[in-house]
Length: 260
Image (cartoon, rainbow, N blue to C red; front, side):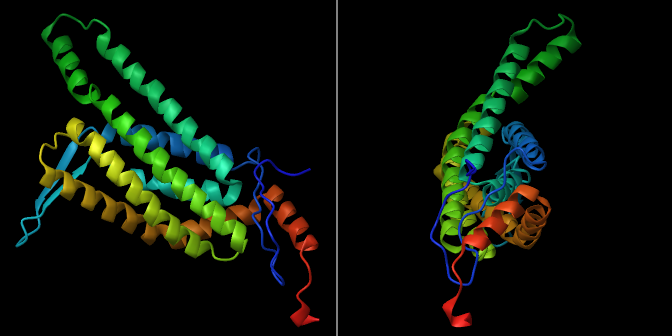
């Protein structure tokens, strides 16, 4: 029986090429999905806070970012792992699940804000703090939904298509190529929509915020690629459904005439 995540592709002589994917029901997908959902929710809360580290000496370039900057690259790393191991369809399911839960969390924040607070000074102070902290989160969630859905979908599409062509080979190349393009699309869309919620008011601030966000996310992902690739290879080795499909693909691959 063919896996719903597997995509038949042409075979490459001498190599078990072709896109092989594990079953989503195996032991790792639920953990990866839970981690992605957690990262997306926490990033949405953190990104509602504008952060500045001052200016770069001698340049006048202001270092502007948001409170979720250190978390969000993890969502792309997890997306790369899910796409490589379980396929683009599983990655789409993870994206939809992450943002469905994020929308539910955002609606919950609005209900919490709308509930009547204690009428004393402490209760009113907490109400004001909640409105200030959680009130703008819905804008960040909309920005994240638009940016991450577009960027991660492009990222997963590229990883999937490249894997169809090269099979198990070229993992590092897939991660490098897809990460940069996906992050570029995501960052431009997210920063444009979320700027108002964060407190960015000028085009110059937006440009600095977008450029820094893109460079940071890409550099983190690129720096993490050796670890990401090692984790992917370990997951492939330890997932019985992946190994079973890889073995069947290798058995069907034509022999390399140069080695006869």
